[in-house]
Length: 134
Image (cartoon, rainbow, N blue to C red; front, side, top):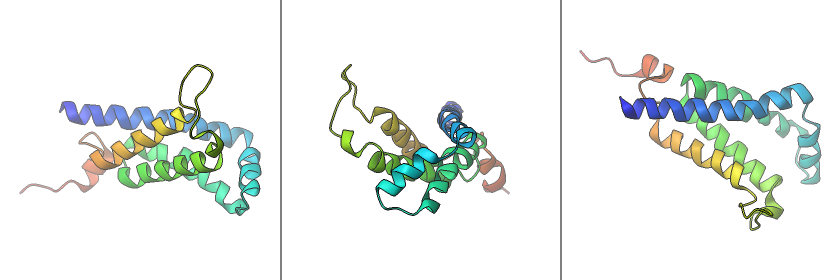
C-alpha cells in the first residue's frame, strides 16, 4: 500500500503544481505563448495545447484518470517549453548555480516517472479498469 500512497502523492503533487501554471494562463491569456510560437514560425493553434498540458492533464493526474496519457501530455508540454522557451539556456546555470532549466526538467522527470509507474490503486484508473478477480 505504501507504493500506492507514493504514487498518489506524486500524481497529486505534480498535477497540482502544473495546474497553477495552467490557471495563470487561463486567467491572463496566452499572449506570451503566442509570441514565442510566432518567433519560431509555429501556428497559433499550437498554443491551445498549453491548456491540455497545464489544465486538463494535471486534473486527470490528480484524480488518476487516463494517467499514462495525462503524464505524456505533460512530458510533451515540458519538451515544447524547453525547446521553445529555454533553448538558449539549456547549457547554462543561474547566478546561484542552479541549472537554468531545472524546473521544467523536474516536471518532465516527474511526468515520465508517473507514466512508467502507473496510477496506483488509489486512482480512478484502478477503480474503472482494474481486472476484476473471480
